[in-house]
Length: 307
Image (cartoon, rainbow, N blue to C red; front, side, top):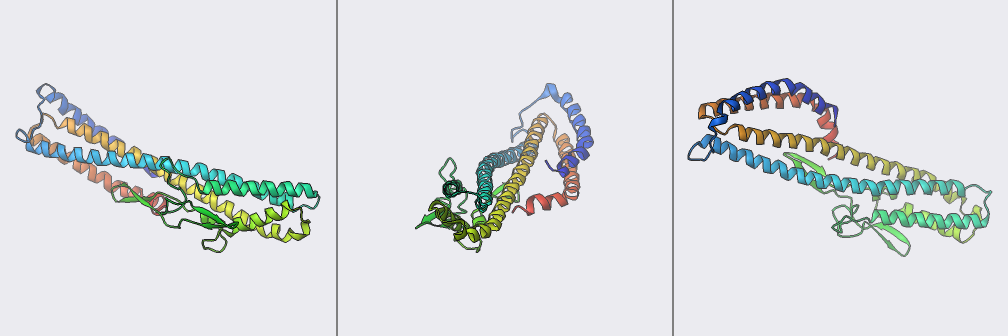
């Protein structure tokens, strides 16, 4: 949870406690005279209860969406973590292969290892969720993110994002783009994978180091750049997950407060309801204003930068 959320909760604790004490006092007074707020008996409380129930259902729907989204992000993070680990393995292979102390058989082995790592990356990029949707294909989630034609790799999805409503007036990207980490030309060709595959083939053929020494040196920098891009993507998903956890807690608190308020309205006279609801509204508005002031910086950091 971010600092602004904790600070707001601390700032609101006393006024809420005072309001709860007053609510409990009123509730004790009417405890033995409870009545069902039917429209014919008490239209004000009935209408307000209908509004409360609608908002509770809406927040409940958002909670279900956000929990599904959190699970999806965790799944994406696992695959991205595998890709990062594989890329770091490729970097180690390149560093070993550029050393001229290795035999031809060693280099053939390096070539086989490199080919296996490339296959692992493609497999992770084409990962699917439990519904069979491809996680990293952008909005074209019905197709594999990467395709291979005649030994050449290309982006089979797109660079677009799907957005999901996670709260009132808040949207969040539901996917993340990582295939671009393997393109050095900013197009659909995943030329880093192509170049790595070519190097793998040269090493497996037992060619002398002099034939591909320059290729190894030229691949070190783009491989490092790909690692950094994958790390950044993983960090962004972590921020999204943290934001959703904080939002889920906030929505659960609202549900519980509204359910409590609905129960507290039972048995009140119309005058008591007016007074009680106005107190709640005044407290809510003051908290909203206070919340906006306190969270302005974090609102930008968490929600605007991840859109």
